[in-house]
Image (cartoon, rainbow, N blue to C red; front, side):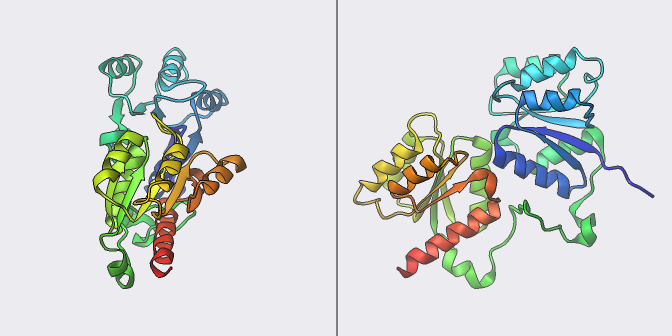
Length: 287
């Protein structure tokens, strides 16, 4: 007997978040289509993609989530598709407008985790399967396998226990994932959403490694990197750039300013980022 899996369209402009959401839904028994922004989503929907549900970001380039909802609401072929909004904005006006346009739920990225998203999806369209029933109880391994609860191997636990990590990332949902992942891996983690908060933390706390985004709301990651490398107390802390930027000039600039490494978010899983951090710390411990 052929089982038709429920299909979900994920509309999210952040590549790392798309990967995290896609992985969770796929491992939970759904098929997933991806769109990088609202225009991409509407092009797919008009090309006869008819998902069982849409997870829709609000703030996106070209066409935002509200504009997508408005267009779907006025289209008899699309208006019945259930939509869950995912946003960094918690404005009452946004929530009310989304509800008027037919959204089934409005989730704040800052306070929502993947388990809650999955529960909302299952409540609306059913389908999926518990982790214990997938592949005989063993989660499948793929390029995008992300397990936030994976424990640190016993032989490495003592070396990493309590090592201090600062992550500077303005996306609240992604920052929360980093904190959860590295805390689970045995690190002591502090997080900042911008340069002001990062420098405030660094006044009284010295991390052993820093994960630094480049595009931030106040000053850029490049400026933070340059400032830290001129500070006698902090200049030897390894800094890994973790960004959506990936142009050669961006990589060259970061490395010339003293970055330890440069990782493009869309190219690495959380597990791979964690492993790289551990390798950098191990190298510095023996140098």
